Amino acid sequence: MGEARAKQLADRIQVLVAELLERRVKDPRLGFVTVTDARLTGDLREASVFYTVYGDEQARANTAAALESAKGLIRSEVGKALGLRHTPSVAFFLDAVPENAGQIEELLEKARMADAEVAKAAAGAKPAGDADPYKRPHDDESDEDED
Image 1 (cartoon, rainbow, N blue to C red):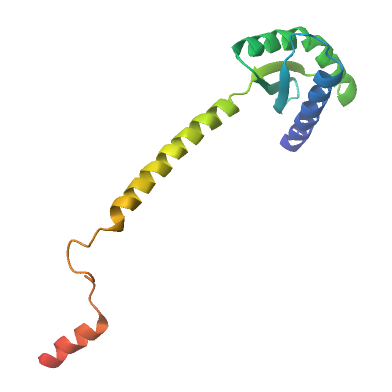
Image 2 (image 1 turned 135 degrees about the vertical axis):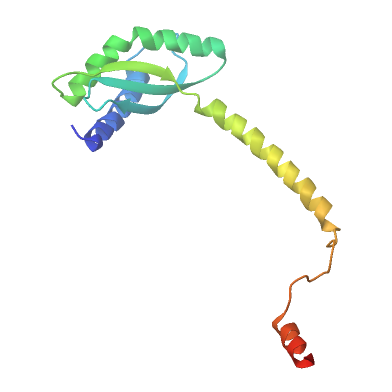
């Protein structure tokens, strides 16, 4: 199968898993979960589903346990919906994108503050040498006339 076909099926799996978690999985341990991405191997045998959970570490652990217990139901429903010869196995992975985005935002804020300090220091600065250290063409012509 081509890479485009695998991507198309992965997108479909992402939608299917999200709908199943919303409508079919009734596990009380399942927290406020969002399916962020799904990837399918080139041979269409293994699907990796990435998710985020709103809440603390306990909510993440409970959601991971709920997803693990619902894996069979999800796999069978995905297989029925896709109609493939071999239903791909489903593995769930906690997506670290929100945490990484938070760290990036903190670093960007530090960079903004440092830029503001540099701009403030440069506001009253004067050049160390001449105000205009570059030669002008009219300067070269006047030098030739003197010879």
